[in-house]
Length: 192
Image (tube, rainbow, N blue to C red):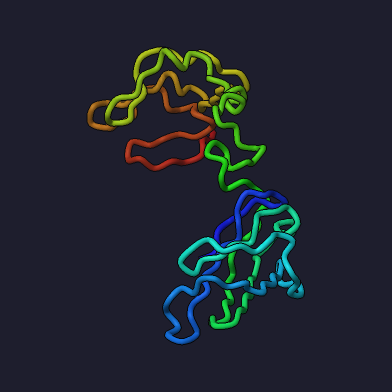
């Protein structure tokens, strides 16, 4: 399984397994494998790192900045007498540091988030407000009306009208915008 390695670092060794060519299962020890790698799909070539044995059929290419200098996958091909060939995608070279526990080595991540807080502005009187469980805003007063205005226009004589409990409009209806309202609810133009 491929793992991420930061570009141009000596962070991780390239690990691979060689198995016995007789049973095709048992890890083969005591080999001197011939290894080539391909960086991001380029032609295979010998790695810059030295190849050494770990144990139990596992081998490694020493970590070095030359082998990890190109972004993308590193393909590994290894052969040795008495072992099956090994062909794997051993690593993926990335532009960030996957071993950085704080910010993955990305310069735009602020671990403390303090620099991002400075850009938030709390509205005027925000702290005096409260929100109920039902979502209603209560308490306090929002007095900052900058940029807002209310305007309204009412018909002539509107203030002298009234609506009764039964829904009937009463008052002087002769001169409401040049229109008269008859008792049956019909509207006709005011005339001579």
